[in-house]
Image 1 (cartoon, rainbow, N blue to C red):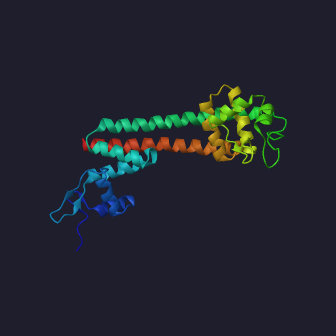
Image 2: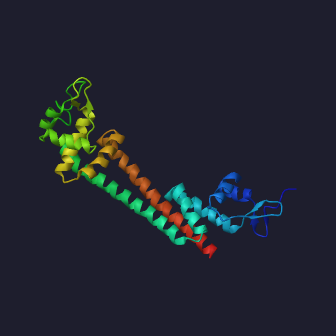
Length: 249
């Protein structure tokens, strides 16, 4: 006969695992990592868990979507070691990161709002001689003239990561392809709008990843949705952690 799954409120690893769709090895690993309190052992060496362990597992799994696996692990380890203040500090750091991410999103959205009218007013729609001087691209002088800036400014933007021209293998001259020209135009408009170089660089990284302004605009909705989901997950995790803290006394 198998062991009774619950004896005097005690649970087997498999009982704890089944509720959450986990393997028994995962439950053991969580205990070893300090996510669960240490389990008692039967005279035969079997682990026995209690509703307190079930509460710890529920809290951890609820924390993961909002805080990530590593931070959720650190939070639970701190709680189980009696270091609640450290757990709260880790939670505060996650919330601060979420706030920073929200501010970054707002900055990107604001920058796009500033850019779209300016880019729409360009007579060539962002193409033209500077952007399409053939397969080899364009050089620093024509591009600087097109934008109404000095070549030294483009070199400064390159050092800041705003533009990334390649070098002609024969002459060593900087060559700006179509994407580089787009980035230079965006940087120019944002500088005119008062943005600092360190504010522009992350935006241009987003533009590059998205493949342009229009794909980036579409991606912002997904980004906003992910931030909202993280915020709600943090609330759900906080509720489970509070229940666990009450159970611990």
